Image 1: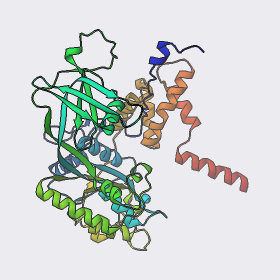
Image 2: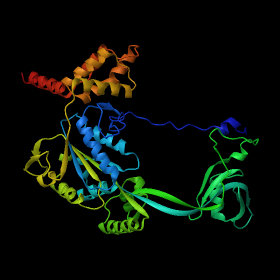
Image 3: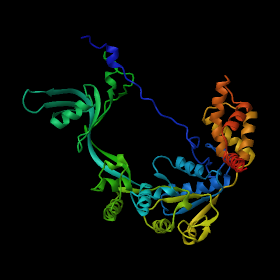
Length: 449
């Protein structure tokens, strides 16, 4: 039997990174200056200067972490950038601040009650930063010897050093497994957590960089640690309240975090967790990080949901709630009562309303140019003008959809740049809503005649 070649053994397959262009992937923030005022075009956002400046104040409010439980309503016509503003806020806040997005229709499910769905959304939007002091051993591995007797447990000795001292540790079965799993060898700089027994390889010792040994291209060389081998280190964990709920739920457990099937979590568990969290905050072991809960299409909620939110914003550990709607005076879901934006009056009084304006022709043109750049589509000024005109007659969303379609059409005829003929062709092939309705109605009339 032939042995595999060395190249076949050392071959490492690269994992293909999935990068898809979404509806709001071109947005990188709110486009604010140092004074939290918005410029006309920045961070992928165009226009809506007043609304973006207002969201800048919301951003400061969330970042201060001193005011929580506020509710903001983004109101405006379809296609005026309400969801884009929310995404810009999420990008501006960064990864440390929890940001949860749900649609108004998501709360209706047979698997759980509306109150439970909203409770989970609220608690996903509040994080807890837990500070934990742990003892670690950090140094360069001088020698690792493992005895593998034919009978009995394995034994080993680990010689580890810093620039100031050197120590030999006797190893048990569990520690040997951890070191073997990380493929630790002489010359590695490692970190061992004494409490959990976990091992982290920080890199190869810089003193070994000139040794005649085969090293991987990704090998990092780090200096040998100085001072004591055993040190105290503060480790910071950031988890949401919902994650703590799920982990402490006996019926579900930690695996539910990966499966997504959390189901109903009892109020008793949450009350105990809240008491423990308040105790940690009081002794300085943890700090609360109120985030943002964004509810799109908020007019889809009914009276029970609004009653829940009305009570939720009065609680101590509550995120800032941002909502969006494109409705005017409509019926509140499940009732015959007509109210502004389909929201009950008592809850509406608690909201700060931010209005979005319709885009001008110049702003539509700039948005289309930004989207074309994001999708790596080259367009000449004539085709961009044609697409702007289509957006004014139909909708901005429809014209954005035509960009990638027109590029495919241009490539088919061997061109690298989208021209008016490509825009015209895809416009004829793919209908917008109004033309589609007219087409169907004309067909019905012909059948009736």
